[in-house]
Length: 92
Image (cartoon, rainbow, N blue to C red; front, side):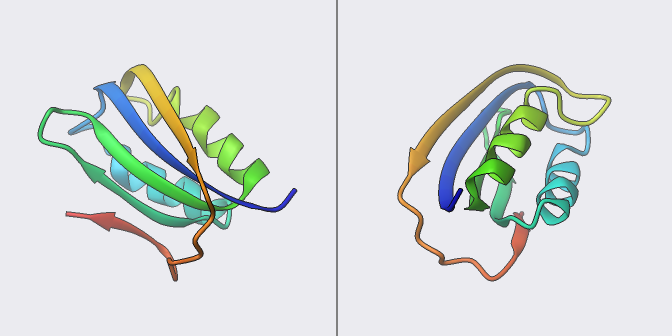
């Protein structure tokens, strides 16, 4: 399907529930690159690059997240693929 990039904001009870680590595990499993981080307002932000179908799968996963998360909303902005990442990282 080709390479794509998505910038995602996840809101709800998504900090302190292993959301970043679980997102990294899922991204690596799907072969995606990019990053995930907590935001000061309590939400989680991520950028995913790679196969568009894999990105669609992780976005779907983000609607649930890890078992302790309670996701309220997932905002997705599709952006032009840049190929700037070597791996998927957690930003602290």
